[in-house]
Length: 282
Image 1 (cartoon, rainbow, N blue to C red):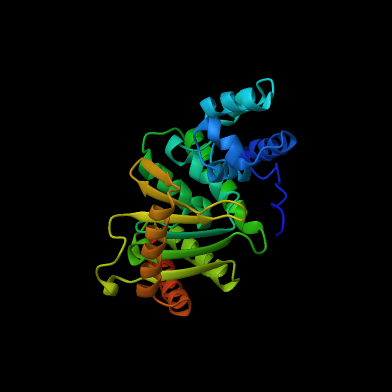
Image 2 (cartoon, rainbow, N blue to C red):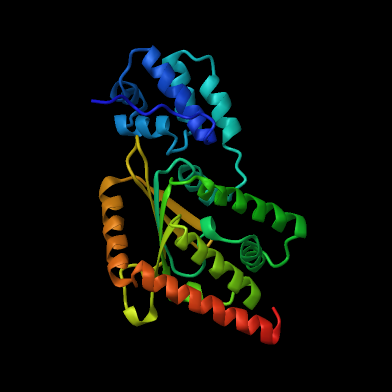
């Protein structure tokens, strides 16, 4: 059986802490199950911490320092790494996204963050915070574009998107912004960097009418599901719950247009917005 994947501590703050945890545990001669027992967590939970797919809590860090005699290392770094450029409800999901090997997402209302343009992101943040300063909006856009850099990798993570037709039709930021955004999405699909499917209005009722869904898979840890709401979010690792949401996503894929038909749909919408921008201005 092959050994665990070599961790890259530079890939995310949690990967840094996880790599050190794995090193210290192995130096102590403990299995993941043996280390998890005094923390009242499963061995798989320790594996998730080591893989960087879950955020270490301060009380866990303090107990790990005691068990592994690490002189406060985990507590100090856990406190420092809790600072995030992302909103509290999304920070853990964003960190998990950075180390995922596969990301599958259904979006009901807006183009997902990983494939947004700067202008689209700015329009979204202005809608969320219409009285925010330009500096605050710029900082949010910069953080969003850092996530987009995941797609600069040639093959990983695999990104598969199902977008409700409302995402394509909703004028976010004006016709010129929408034309650019949809053209960008179409380019990513043509370059085979993402798989995109459109769930048309004609599909009628579907399995995710209550909201959006993100599924993340990893090499060395169980999959996660992230549920997104208005100013809130929930990251789930319960195997039964994740399996249920995986079925939800499969049902959405079955109801959506094929990738080829979806590309044509998106391209047509981009041209419509482009003509509108030319006729009436942005």
